[in-house]
Image (cartoon, rainbow, N blue to C red; front, side, top):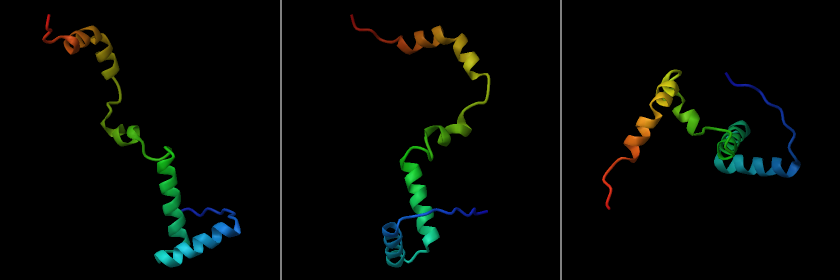
Length: 84
C-alpha cells in the first residue's frame, strides 16, 4: 500500500521536476519516488551489506561456538607451509 507524503519544494525545483516528467513521460509521483529511492540508496541509508545478508546470518549460537574454538581456528588459519 502506498503512503501519501506532502512536501514543500521551491519553484525552481518544481519547474525542473515538471520538465523532467515531460521529457521522461512519467508522473510527478513516479519521478519523486525514483529520486528518493536512488538518493537513499546512495546515501547509505538504503540497502547495505547487512540488509542483503541478514537472512544468511544465523540467529544464535554461532558466536559462542566460534568463540570457544577461536584459538584452534586461528592456528588452522595461520598454519601452513613456512619457508625457512
